[in-house]
Image (cartoon, rainbow, N blue to C red; front, side, top):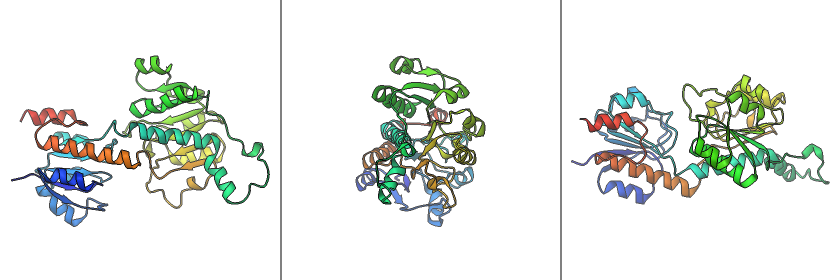
Length: 328
């Protein structure tokens, strides 16, 4: 009897066909909640799940006694109860590497757009307000030669830093565990967070969301930044205390912000952030290109197939679950 997969992510016809050659595939296009009756009814016979943006709880896992693997089409895994999955010997796979460069592109686009006031001034032209040569009231600030502070220095953080150091001659500071290879490559200097915030012209946040990083950037941290500094967040929304950020922007405690992620997504219509002239707000587009999303889905398909065949997936979040499964 073939193992069953529940697919609720964006997969191409070719990717679904690849899975269907070995497994029974049940699709749930447009699934928005794990409370969907059809999805819940299918869980007891599911051996694998593939998709993204679906909140999985321990209670949900209790309804899936045959579940062996979840292949998430994402790098972040804050929607998954990793400890509960590991206790049950369920593998959790993600898709790092394939979206690193694309997400770094987004991060640097936010740096550039915020510094040069691209969105604000494009709207200025659209409104017909450009009647004469612009003056200091509309000037932006340089990016080249400035100090870039990376809060988080993993794959994506390093990719953003390369763009800054090698493309724009930026001095790179980072707040993370020591990275001697990146220090040698980019001339990066390690700082404690408060020191980094005080020195950087651009603060770019790329840390994963954990209990320790929730509201890592709050009122205290924002107060440490230069009044001319710009904050860019391409990590997860809750890493930044949004209420504190709004106050800092309104009071001029920092110059501007470039945001691809928010505490509530989609962004609430009541949020003042998208209406602020010194904010560039994007709808979580970090990896949203045709090429990258297809590559992410393919990595998830490959992870899922390997796991269900009893082989080690390419990208595994919970190594302990693999050890547990191998010892059975």
